[in-house]
Length: 330
Image 1 (tube, rainbow, N blue to C red):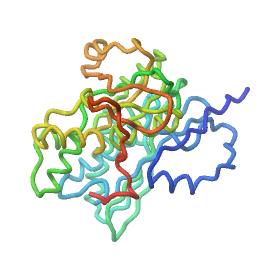
Image 2 (spheres, rainbow, N blue to C red):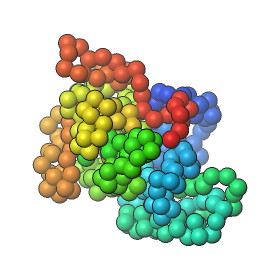
Image 3 (cartoon, rainbow, N blue to C red):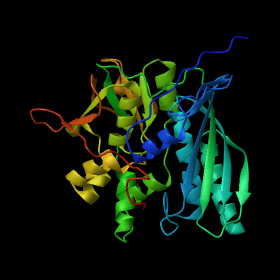
Image 4 (cartoon, one colour):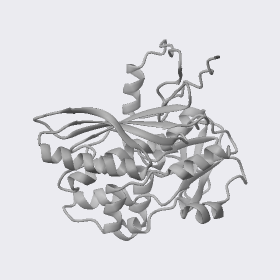
């Protein structure tokens, strides 16, 4: 049997977190037999059509127990991890869940949420690890998926349109309201507590060869489009007026801050992808998936992320998305 060729590496995007990752990864590392893609994308790609991702959730960094019930914390941890599987255009198969928790009842509640999220995705819990701790709750989830047509971050080309699914900023709005010591509206709370990865939509994009590049929106539209641009060696130009901001974000934060929540807040877990002109039919997404898909910009020659606010020329976005090593935690 002939080994399939490597499809990597994928260049990492900007930011302190990714600068650190670049220092941790040796450029001389050679992928072992059977590994088609290592680090740099949403998931690794293994011979046979398997994709593997890992994602951790840490108390007081990714969530606060004053905000969510324990079952919701488990649900959210698995959903966020499986969103990386979706971002490769893969079918979710299973998860491995490892936890460090100091209370047996909390473990049961977390596991119940993990199982529910996996089941909703059509996946199962395949294993994991468990440890006691005197510190904060720690959950690490390895997601496993399957696809023979993975869509990477590095395929965007000048002339492509940039698209996003759904509406952005509701999850970030919930966090901002909690940080003020208030309870967010139910719609915003749900966006944070029960993210819904776009498995079917991503598989459609992959199977129809529609998306040239694909990523999920975990770090905000500005940050994640920067990853697409860096991986593909292109410039991303976003159109401010086109960004589909969640109405609840506008209602709670006002138009300007709601746009900032969509650009920089993160944790929407929608899809961001590029496609050639006249390739995407928004009506198909409405009819078959019940969601909006919105053109938010264009891929151009150059580098960086720029934004067109309706003036004479686009301006560079000097701020990126969520970065664990550049801003304060929750």
